[in-house]
Length: 236
Image (cartoon, rainbow, N blue to C red):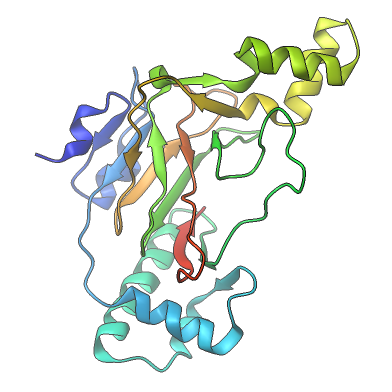
């Protein structure tokens, strides 16, 4: 049995069509299409690093992929990436395929860390979902909503934010939290059990947006060790 079945917010589907058509409902705010993809995706990363280095995030389109000199195994991986770019584009999405050595981090983080390595939810001004797939390890991680607490609801953190805000108007304070995206970041509760998004699996997760029938999916980017190859991630 797929280990994801035990997490109440996750539903596993059997096809891309089912991934598109399945609505979020009840406690389910993360849909996963498990896949074992053929090809050597690490070779794609190696080829990209050889061309542009690994100093910053590199975005790749279909032309970029076709320009790479690859072995048969690398070519299989390229075909899988192009297939995903096209199937997501056909849904009216704008997928980004990125080779990611690391994400930016705050030089002096405050009471609430605001980078993607912290537990967080994505947000949108209109009804929208996030789609993502990790093609190389390490993969993104998720956390059930029952095992997460919004950082602004942690008494010590809220008190520190209120001191920094320096006002007494509750409405203005709540607007300040939303404006700075503090209300999109979470702490894991004691004993929480995160789950891995896995390599090759395609996910659709709920965001914090108007009209969403479910809470947003809490997730985070994995930390990469020094000297580790960049990640290959598709997200939209």
